[in-house]
Length: 235
Image 1 (spheres, one colour):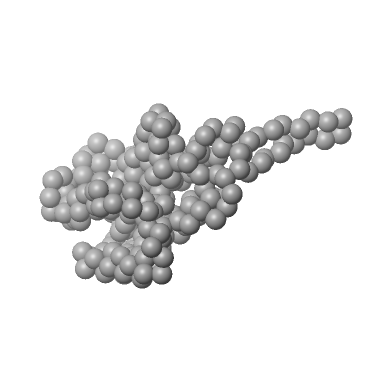
Image 2 (image 1 turned 90 degrees about the vertical axis):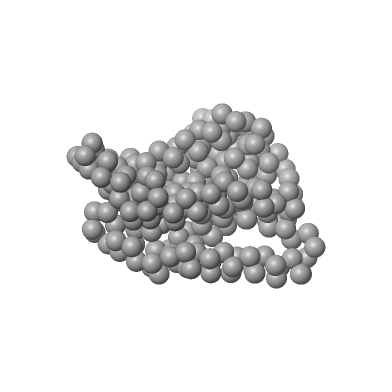
């Protein structure tokens, strides 16, 4: 499993190196190695607690879940996974200042999700880890958690000057990860690696994105008339 992840990281690194050769400005240097420390720690820790290894191990966490929350079953994680993105959209609609305009923000979000889920699915179908509920062999890593942390990281990158906003995003993403374990759908290691992938993929996309759309003001303006009602969204 470590070999698979190392190969994936090498592919991403080599892709970045090739692109840098074409353009000296392809990679934003403010996203240095330090910016990847947290997601790297998440991934490394997740790999270290696989099966019965590390502390607390994935098996130990599952045992705790079975002893204390064996009857837990809640599908809220299927819905709140989108919450960080909806928060960002809401802030955009009311013209709250963000790093990128709407067009670039949409492109950044889309590319981050695509990269994150591509890595997740390659790992899922190459490692074939059985889920803790024994339903399928695509447990590692957690796609829900990766998706939630991808959106949370986008929220962070767009609203770095608003700690309450991005902390809320990370809290929601953490809740998603916890619920995947409580619902017996994922191992602890799945969740940790998924979170790391989501954050790392988003940082890489922000570091390599080319801002090609003019930075216009964006806003939300309700329109109410005699025979119609709606809104104008400018970006």
